[in-house]
Length: 454
Ligand code: UDP
Image (tube, rainbow, N blue to C red; front, side):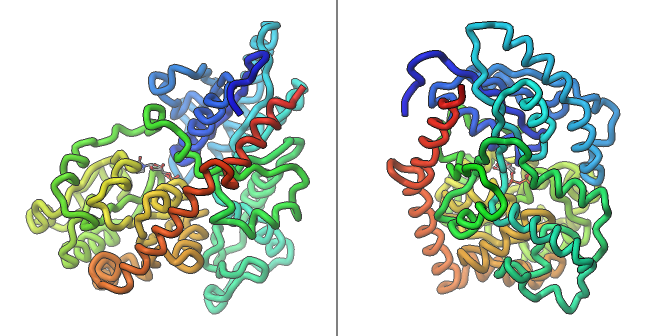
């Protein structure tokens, strides 16, 4: 479907303010813009996106009252709660102003599942709303089972059960569930999960996934949701490179020139995304395993991602001299470009959903080092279902690190087979976003669905 023929309709997007959520929402904005909608992005003041990267959108900052608030990772639940309490009224005021302009029609509000205040705003203003899930379907579905297990007083699970499959969620094991399974879940956390899976009056759900990856989970969705689901991903494959910059941190582009000098498929790219942290011991064991593996590497170490360190001061003494030109460490990389570079042959990843999709779309096999939440689920699917990643059994053991890197990057049959499966998966995913593919068709259905709102 091309541009909307009659009046230019506006879609108001409400992203959640962390990288892994902001990126897919801005990608969705670009996709809908290419379908003829005008775009308003109503975002928090905290971690606000850079409007310069998207001159085609209108950006509006919602007063979030987060100034002075503890926005660190350990306080995320309170951050979400504060945003949901504080941003509703300013969003109403802003939309009422827009609606006074008779030439302007707001088609609907599309909000990140965590920004559920936006659904209440939509109801209050008689506007339709659609919820965007930025993670995979299996992850979201697992919360229904987690709540069921909680209501049966099954938490905490003993260590002896952790390797067992979760009934109904096989092949996920108890240890792959995206919640702490070895303790009782606090009521406040349960309340958040309930809010997270509840779509309230929303008219549909948009997923950044594809049937190629999550066919059976998508087919189960009707058990919990009676509204249409649109699986139109991976979003990033449909966005022109010119509007793909969504990073909060400055990308170190010097690493591309360094990659240009490396042999094809030789470099291990390593990144744990925008939020995950590790301790000093793990950093040091990873560094030793890497040094002993003899493989070239490009390693993203985010400032304060290792026990609140400034940057790389906890690396083993003499590490950089030891590895010399064989390795490069940066604070933040242009990841999609890195993964697309012919020199990159493997991705050591925390398995965030965006990183997972980006790696699949460049056919780069992975070493899975999940830290929390959906990363555990994605990792299980990467190494057990799609069989395109290796599970890192003990991240804090240098010999396991070395062995796992060699299995992926050096040893002939295993690494090669995994690379071939990744290539097959990439081909299938690519065909789903091409003309008449499932995501392509689903996007057209979504466009027609939004255009049909009165
Ligand atoms: N990313 C990047 N440069 C880096 C590390 C990550 O651009 O050095 C991007 C990556 O391409 C992905 C996003 O940050 O789009 C991370 O999202 P993901 O869902 O993988 O993980 P999260 O950060 O939410 O844990």
